[in-house]
View 1 (cartoon, rainbow, N blue to C red):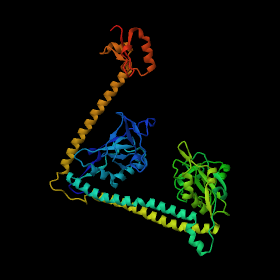
View 2 (view 1 turned 120 degrees about the vertical axis):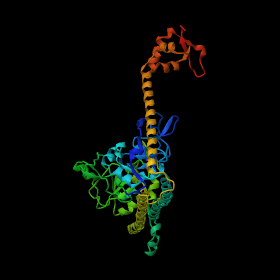
View 3 (view 1 turned 90 degrees about the vertical axis):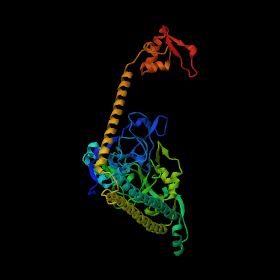
View 4 (view 1 turned 180 degrees about the vertical axis):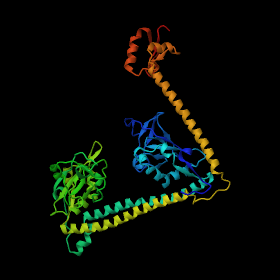
Amino acid sequence: MNIPKHWQYISFTEILDIIGGSQPAKEEFIANFQQGYIRLLQIRDFGDKPVPTFVKMTNKLRFCDKDDILIARYGASIGRILTGMSGAYNVAIVKVIIPQPLNKKFIYYFLKSNDFQQYITSNERAAINGFNKEDLNNFQIPVAPLKEQTEIVSILDEIFEKFETAKKQLAKIPRLLERYRQSVLERAVSGELTEDWREENNVEFFVKEDMLGTVIDSIDYGTSSALNTDKKGFPIIRIPNIGTFVINLQDLKYAELSENEYSKIKLELDDILVIRSNGSIKLLGKSAIVTEKEYDLGFAGYLLRLKPKKEVVIPKFLNLTINSNLIRNQIEQSERSVSGVNNINASEIKSLKINIFPLPEQTEIVNRVEKLLKKADEAEAKYKQAMKMIDKLQASVLAMAFRGELSEPQANDEPVSVLLEKIKIEKSRLEQERKALQKTQNQKKRTMGKIKKEKKSIVEVLKNSAAPELTVEECYRESGQTNPAAFFKDLRNNLASLEVLKTEIKPEGEVKIKLKTQ
């Protein structure tokens, strides 16, 4: 990437540093804040569905402030730039140490640029194991003079604010489309959608309310056999493959089954698969219909397979009915949670109430619903295209910014060479400060460990104490003993040498003791 002559490239690790997070044991996690605990930040907490987790405060944790810049270092989220939250961050995250006088927001925007993102994600070792400081040694950062950094940040802030406003407006579209789809289905299953069709064809309104079980020949559970990604055995449809009315074949898993077991779960044209068990009740009861593409595949145990009676109900009509709020409301209004997992079984599916129209009207309903939902699908495709366009524009603007195309040299701006020397001095000072703190903490750990190992008898504690008397709790703490049973055994064995001052019992119930020889 070409940069202005008055800028300078410099290695990431010459001016910046990263500090990895810590990983407390999961059994120490709690869901609600308590005194002495702190929020443990994980990558998911910076998204739309954070899961608050708190851990006990210790000097083993790594801490960050709201304005610190963090980077996701593992897996699918590698390279993601995180900021805006304070707490302790976990091992999947690193904190970027940015010395003054370098503009922190300038670095924030650069880390979001394709130049940095592509470097991290194209590093095969880093993508698998997570990147570290050594991976960044050869990565070059373009540095502008300080006043020009400030100017670039100001321009990017203004542009990206407009991008964010556009994204927020666009983000409303999926919810609007979902409401539109449900409105179409609600009108369909109530008969409102085909009201004009009945008038034009001189057909009387007739609908029969019945249980879903009356319109299916059978309902079956899927396989509970272990699934694999090695393509060994038969391909299996799972919950993630159940899309909106249809099945998607991405990320298929496989199961090694006997021919007999496979024959029981082999899918046929117009079968309907229903999600019967899931952590989210919103997915419970969602269904999709089997087409020629899924013919002969199997299905997993968290799904149910329905075989419609085609002489009574058109499979596509039954599928759209199951996905409508007519069914959705029946499922959500009932209590069906076992160990935090929402379930619906075959008997409950059969007992759901549905509206059954004459077959000609079912055909018309399906045709109209498909046309209306196609419009929704087209609108959704345009929404996704618009979001991608914004992402491309953002990347383009960042590339222009770090080629120096959005800014001009600022009057009286000190040369980059002078700025870099100041940054290196400050970076060195911060490193020494961290090493000194780490050394102090390590010494404290060793001292505490030594104290813990040196266990004293109760008589030794009292003899060495400057106070003439101690409480039982104080004796236990000073003894270095970690086993209460052993401490009280020592106390009983030395009662002849001790004097229990029963007359000085405090309101808290503490009893003071001293040596009789004192």
